[in-house]
Image (cartoon, rainbow, N blue to C red; front, top):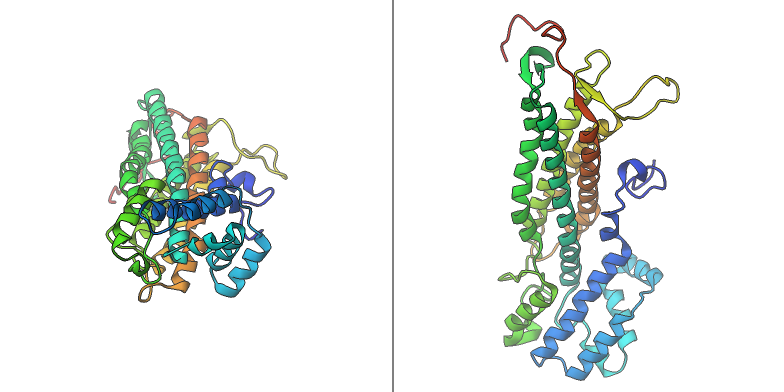
Length: 366
């Protein structure tokens, strides 16, 4: 056991994802926050709020900046958020009069939420590519095995024969719908968070709108009419989507595990896990992992919905809850898609023997 199985030295072999993990590394986190501060200096200089010389000094200093992580850790323990000590370090690195222009008009949540948006964009693009790969693999499975007649089951009992295509479609089609929804979900989180202390950008005066537009353009994020510091529907919708994806994959995993049972044998798996005590076994590890990750994300989703309750203009409690839950949900979805792609490649449907498997129940009521 460990606090994070996604990063554990050996549990990560099952639950980790080397392609997704870098988006949630400390390097990516710091890099995204520095990208915000650099772009802010550029945008404010373009609007005459920050002197050009000061902006250049900020940009140069941040380009090679390496934070004191121990000091950041101590700062978070004290302040509950990383930005106060990060800004202190940035101002020390910039030095002279230019230091006073670092982070001008912004607040901690602007930097952290925008930094998250910058990291979620490529993370969601990766999930989209993996969804495409799983759907494509299921299309290939259907083309090969779709006409094979297998037993349909209702309420865990043999019902009537159905084509394998019927089962494959119940795995594929929800994933295709989730893929269609992804663009809207991604648009809901790929936004600029910029509002200053209480969402009014009061320090920028009549230049607030122009700076916001320039900043959004520099970061390739969508500007919004007002900051969404306490409006968390975007990240909650993402969490719901992540749970939809893992839930649909979990349904596929459960079906495969049941059909591959020795006593059933409707599906043959070309690969699986071994047993330390029973060498004859081939355990459906990939299928089981899909079920686990579906249940994991379904559990965390309720916590993300709790984080919708932000009191007034900003909540420390609800915000911190997001930090704890959302990265794990993204990792779980990415890992599930990785396992799903491999699992589909291992599946082969077996035709019914003598027209039936088991004895269908006499009462076919659903």
